[in-house]
Image (tube, rainbow, N blue to C red; front, side, top):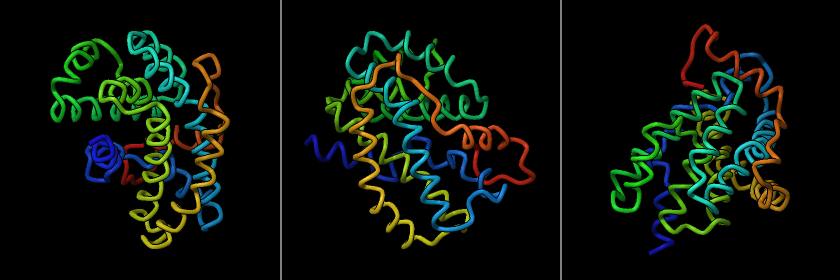
Length: 217
């Protein structure tokens, strides 16, 4: 049963909100920073480390101590000074929570009620929701990293940077990066939060000023 739940959570059909976001890739592509396979792979790698250092610690902390959701949601709101990234995090967190409350109302009801007065950032909400569903911490951490890679590559396909077959190949090739990030970041706490990809952060902050946009961030 648990394996089926995990497959459901990582299925691209699961409406977690990430489909509407490029994680900064669209702005990087329009700025000419990502035009080749190699540059795209570097973007994915940098984004993975950013997720490991700037999101995973909060997800881990909330998963271990769900009663700290309000505190850590406020901390992550203060940490996300980039307005575009902050907004995207809220949108994705609320999308995950809304879906969870509709699919698993009994397990998610208390989190849903609590989050009505919170920012509902993606990292803390993910920790709370997956803990409530009984998903182990190590699996929760892998899901976060997997969804990050999948989201960027799905955006790359829709932007026309690469085709779907190449995207799947890159997804497979990123397995080693995911394990390295987990090895370094799995035990980080909220005190270890760090910005490791400042260029991506700057590019993403310009997203709202792009002449034309396919994604929200």
